[in-house]
Image 1 (tube, rainbow, N blue to C red):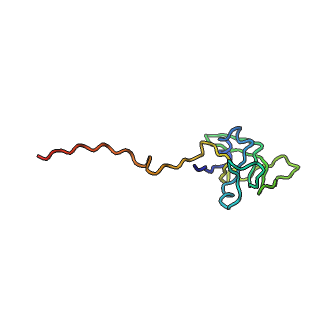
Image 2 (tube, rainbow, N blue to C red):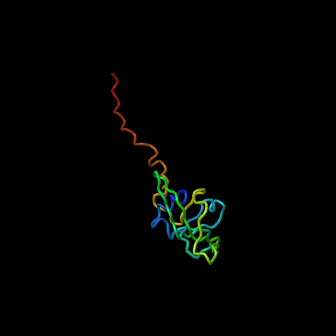
Image 3 (tube, rainbow, N blue to C red):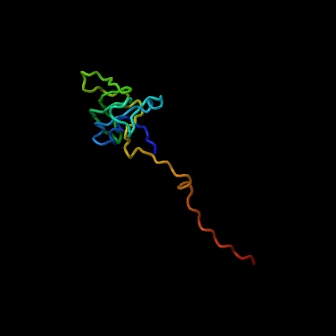
Length: 131
């Protein structure tokens, strides 16, 4: 099972409550070896993540765009200033994003080897007697 990365507004639109309360991270952070949240990790752990606090999504012609605000935690330490409740999440449309608990619509299940790769073979015809 593998989660797929998408733009932040699309990811948030697939999460409950438009992603408010979710922990999200840019996929490139995981590619660089930074600690990112998983479904098994706890809130107080040393991960790099945005905790989403406010969302404004707009759907036009089937395309989801919008803005999100949250609190940035970098390796477990809060980076968003304490005097701010939250700040704007930048790069939502520029980078690909994932959430700690991916929405079911974005999870790909790997195919079993050979299970659906080949259609069933037609039954063989009986041999014709030679005349």
